[in-house]
Length: 472
Image 1 (cartoon, rainbow, N blue to C red):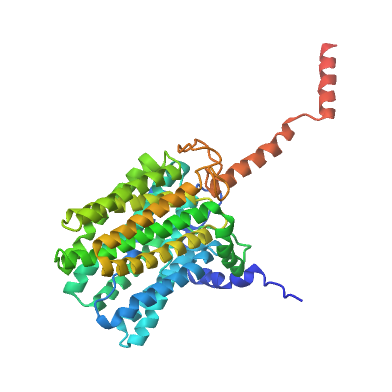
Image 2: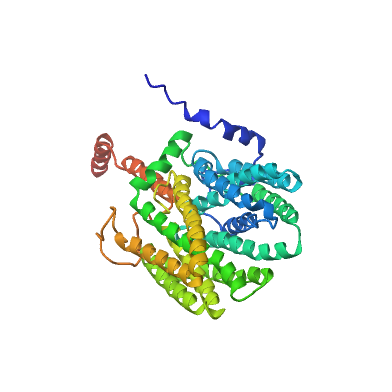
């Protein structure tokens, strides 16, 4: 006889304890009757949080610490699978604040510990808990106003990419001028700053799926790729795009040092070229992505990226202009692809947005590992040309995945619904979940109010009798 599954409240005990420990200021408490559209100020703050959070990935210069990135990546993968989906079944404010607070303490432990074994263990926990940025994307999707949703998603994404590239820039400076322990002091300070900003500004958003248990939300991560063809398609594109991105920036370090003989600091400063396209993302989102179906945006971005990689691969063997062109236009295309993917999967499952994000990010993370490993191996075998050819192949494969399924196709393969790449004025999933709920509520109110305005049979006969009396 199968045992009954514990009630959902059993799995929410941790969230209830956090709710008692973390006080919520009155001005950020949830009001069901208020307007909950995401403001530009909160949107920019979410982007800033992603920037500050990702700067924790500086790395250290100690040669004995070669296992630290591996442990951190393993912890991050576990966090994507086990922690991010929890955002669908608990309130996100206490969860996010608790993760940041605990992470700050872990960074402090990394700074003070003298044991390398302890340092490795703490590095795993750091990777496990630093998934806070991935809890911000569903909030931007759910509460961004319809007319600004694409641009706001782009702002949040820009904060994430900006943080990654700034980390690369600062890693060159830190490696050359200061001790790695100072990096962890900086990380601790950034975590405290993030916690303070969110404590006083982040609204207490309600739970997406309060009746769903933790085992069920984990099971959903397994089943979603087999049930949602649009999610699977965009996740595969994310795998290939992230593989290209990490392969380029990893092998670029070798090329700049071995062929062009640049210093560690100069290589770190090279990341400034990749930072500049980040500021163009909101503009491109406003002018291009908001007017085209995500399919059209992704096709254009893939073609631009492939052209940039081809030029960078050929010219980069004898001139710095090649890596510069690749870094600028390649990152511009990659960022556009990421925003297009995010828009395409925005409403795959409104009640499990964090689970959807977990599936997408696991593919992204695996693509990063794949791109780094294969890119390094090919560079060691054939140099810049081999690794560049590998990146071209990845982007062409992503374009083929895109063409397998059309923009209006509801099933796994085909182009049913036409080739039109323009974004329709009204889409089936054009409104965020909150807006859809409001529309349904308004419809119910309208249907219940209409009958009260129709006179009954008795009232009609009474009015007729009164009219007859007046005529007499």
